[in-house]
Image 1 (cartoon, rainbow, N blue to C red):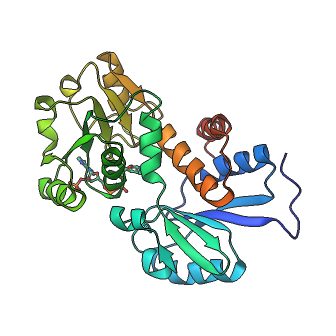
Image 2 (cartoon, rainbow, N blue to C red):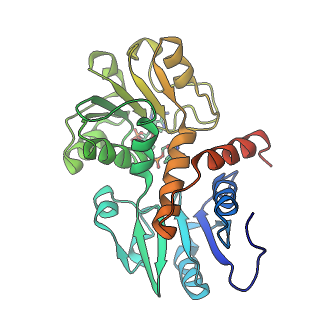
Length: 276
Ligand SMILES: NC(=O)c1ccc[n+]([C@@H]2O[C@H](COP(=O)([O-])OP(=O)(O)OC[C@H]3O[C@@H](n4cnc5c(N)ncnc54)[C@H](OP(=O)(O)O)[C@@H]3O)[C@@H](O)[C@H]2O)c1
């Protein structure tokens, strides 16, 4: 049980726009309760034009930690006192942690990808394919390279995949249609295809039967890509686990404590069952 809200209660939250049905407050508040941490976590709907003012307000109010979501992950960087080397290399901040008066930017998305995949497989030496070349792809590619995988990036707009590969030192770029011809032990979808619709970024026949497939999209929980992958005998990893592990790393960055993974995953499921 969390302590009752009082004068020492710390404020945490997520800044995003639009706020929609974010599951972060449910996951983090469940973790605070399980660990007995005196903090509350809320969602702040911040339009891009209000980002600077919102961060000044957070600074003045002593907000302890902020998660940063779409569309602020790049724009937030100049407003911070420091951004760590990993977040700079990925090119995005998804976590702001207060240290005294300073606000420090970091990125836990890459660890979310890696830890979600490591539920099913080892990554060192494997052939990985990342679909997409946006912010989530950069975190995924960084994480896979960190773990010693060979990484190819396929994207609708091929030139963006080529740029990402050049920036992060990955192993090859192409178009989504190239998937079937590539070695692929691990497949990570970071395109937004499948979000609240029954579509997949790639045809089922292009998915290797022995692959592990992680979908960044978590609404619906079992996307078309995951269903196609499992129907072919591949192992699916739901986007929920990426979200849960990146949140767990945020909590650890502040408190130094291991986050209660199953408690956070249960909270994610409860919001999904009752999205209002
Ligand atoms: N599970 C998690 O914890 C987690 C974490 C981060 C992100 N996500 C999710 O990952 C997704 C991507 O986020 P992001 O920040 O990387 O977004 P982003 O920077 O806007 O990138 C979007 C990517 O999707 C591709 N795309 C969009 N529509 C497409 C279509 N109709 N066909 C093929 N490709 C299409 C884009 O290709 P082009 O370059 O050709 O436009 C681009 O590669 C979102 O759904 C986000 O919610 C989940």
